[in-house]
Image (cartoon, rainbow, N blue to C red; front, top):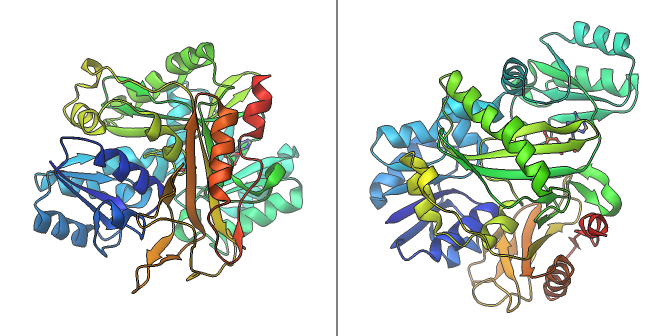
Length: 427
Ligand code: AMP
Ligand code: GLY
């Protein structure tokens, strides 16, 4: 089987590395890919959002499979286009990807089907939103742009001023573009967060190992929200009892809800959950694998990923036993200093071997490129995800941090406390 993976970050590198283990895979391609992925798959400079360009590439390479990893091509309908052209696809249709593409859609879906989530209201004009904020007069409150906003469309406002500023910048200044023509204002929830990625074919749901992201830029969960500065799996807050409750109250109801709306979801559905004092609630859905969750989930997968893709596409997921390794996995993100705001790129990365790897850890490249002379250079905000596994989380973390110290580039920044909250939870 020849597989084209769409995307070019750490998540895609983890997908490519997992697929490279499969004896069924005879050709592995990635677009646009990056410097590290290029050591495992042939990369082509086609943007993930270039639907026509990607179709042309898939035809030229005569691949069997297209794995669409990022949200934006899915929301634009890349999976449909590829299926219409005879390719097998891992990734939901445009109709199903709306579960991430529109927060108004997902909130209304949860309300209609009784799936636990934060209480909310939808607004299409700034004045009514601001009136509502003043009436509620409860802080913090949460303001969310409707559409995709590079993971930055959520503002937790601590005061009336911050909330009204958020509304005006989303709706009037359009800081997130058309994503902000509608918005959701919702109740602020508290509790540990859990990411659960799940394979689903519309008939059954197979949750993967749970994980915990660390979204803020700085230690102690301070600083700006980022795409994710590190992850651990499994998430110790996510007990077997809570997993069963989530299956009953959230995962299966979501699958049935999407079927009920004629939007059957086939692919990886990401449940961003908060374990509140009143039970688990959905913070967000994503229509794809998480980044950097994938980097600590896929290394734990024993079953051949291509077999799972086949089962999902043929709606035979229920027949396939999916096995996981025991133990824990940790990923520390090495970012460019200044990320998620202004940062520089083009810095030489030292310490990696010829394959872009380290002896004692997997290195998932998020933002790197190869120089003309074959050196790895930084090419993004998040640069590398250094990942290690071990029987105990503590040992996985030590191994990931020891490996991280062997790599360096100018202005490298990483959090020193990835996994500390998970370790504390275990006591
Ligand atoms: P998102 O961009 O949807 O991943 O949201 C970013 C982060 O905002 C989440 O990971 C939560 O930490 C936080 N968040 C979103 N919605 C709420 C909420 N209703 N209550 C508390 N925190 C929230
Ligand atoms: N790590 C969060 C996400 O992928 O959306």
